[in-house]
Amino acid sequence: MTDFIQKNFKSGVHNLINSENIPVDASQDAINWFNQDGRNVLVGGRLLIGAENGIGKVKGLHFGYKVNGDKVLYRKTATAIQYLNVDTWVDIITGMTDCEVSFANYSSLAGAFTFINCVDGYYKIVNANPGSYISLYDSTKNFHGKILIDRGRTLLWDREDESSKDKTGLYGSKIDRQDSTVYTVVSSEAIGALGSTNYTGTLAENSATRNSFATVFTATVSAGTEVFQDDFNGVLTSNFGGTGTINYATGEYDITFSEITTGAVTADYQWEDSNIKGVSDFTKSATRLAGEGFQFPQDEGGDAILNVLIGQDGAYYSLKSQSSYRLELDSTDLLATNLLYRKDLGIPYWKSAIATNRGIVFINTSKPTKPELMILQRDQYGVEVEPYVLMSQFDFSLYTYDECEINNFDRYITIFCKSSGAIYNDIVLICNLRAKTVDILKYPCQSSASSAGKFYVGGSLTENVYQLFSGFDDDGLVIDNYWTGKDEKYNSENLKKFKRLRVKGLIDISQIVEVYADFDKSGKELVGTIRGDGSYVDAESSGVIGESQVGKISIGGEPSNASPYFIQLRIKTPKFRKRTLTFKATGIGYFDFELIMDYNISKFSNKIPKRFRQKQDVSLDGNSSNL
Image 1 (cartoon, rainbow, N blue to C red):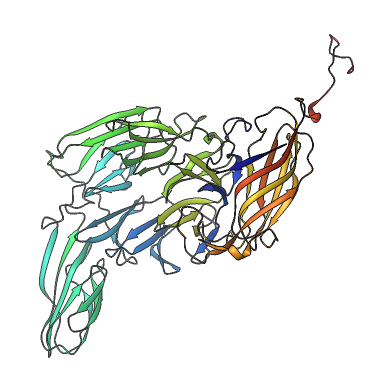
Image 2 (cartoon, rainbow, N blue to C red; image 1 turned 90 degrees about the horizontal axis):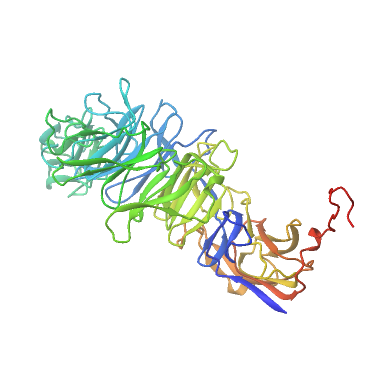
């Protein structure tokens, strides 16, 4: 008699090799469970953000940042770009085509911005005033395409203008110098006559593709000279307690002095135009000068550039469907190395790669029958950037990646993809690069954005945005889930039986979890149920579990009180060669398990299981009955 213990669950899903040969703590298949700190944990749910929307897809989701660090969440629906104002989605740009958009953040002395480019236009949003936008598209200055802003310059690819298309060219803008080259100072602009307290209007030089910043309003009042200072977040405050606001995109202001003015009211400010020597100006001289725009052909194979990312060596890696390029600019910005980096290395979709501090992570589908998760990172000597395969234990060929998005959240990489036969993204693969694990979630996700421990996803079936890993229900419903462990033989081919199954972990009082056993693939049978209100739960030792189970930090909403449990289930088993356990939560609430024990195991002869035994035909023609 002996016992068998499974604990320290840290291997995730292993579905590439025979399920008898995977690690003892691994799962052969699971939906909406993941490994965390040695436990198998039921994943968190979804919380709807804003009002419910209709059928469709959220084509883009992005966080912009204000100067003070506050964040603005943007989304692209079929026909509009919107931002989240508390819990309401507000239109910014409407009447758009049902297309993908590319977002890029940029901060300079002029403020903090989000740039958006697509076939409809080229837009600039001052994040302090997210409800307004500046239209930048000018066929003599820039292009439609996808963008990345790095080191004061925009990189653009997948060019698709009204009159020209270039799918294999990589373009660069001028470098924004953030000085008087691009900033224009306006002094003592008259905005109104004396004799009032409130002044509204529009700055005269803030027009067309310009935005203003560093605004100072001044007037004389009885107490002296009242001066309004700009905090770069759209708020104006005076030395005498006056208040005001400024919209940097439109130039509109609304200021109220502390008392009636007795002298002329003036404004001092600066403005910039990103189309003039800025990050949306792609022009260059006949003989190109340092800091000007550029265009590099990357034509090998004829396949389009899908994405451009920054490698650990600071070079730009263009990922195509069948190959990749590497572009390196020297310190003078006059010499460049633009070479084919690898053949047989490519991605299926422009969002199927992301640059992380570990390297560029991407799905390599250059060999369609064998997709692999890979990373471009420095070799062990820290010199060359090389491709390496990740998560070799996982069968990525089970999924389709034609609309795949890869993002990072906390310590994880997220991969949105399609299960076999699905026509929309319905799977989220959660990959822990450090622990080398993959777990499988089933949620319909098209786009994502993360910030400060919160992970937001845009739907692939509806134009809704959800906070993922929030709470313990799927927008009010029970989370669809199951966890199936290894086909366990206890390292023996002998037949066995055991009498008790012990399970230990944490459970919420409202949760109910069914436990199934399968012996030699004869079919799952329910062998017991773990209840959060059971007598085996130590309710006196409950502890607060954060709403998020991905990572160690709590993500929004109310936490749950989970209590330790240690349950023993009586089981009557047949003589078996291997047994397989499955857990399925049917309630709402937190649940995990950290230990499984098969107690009081008996071993028998080394025979094959009874259901596989048969008499042997001995007739040479193979037609006689069993003897």
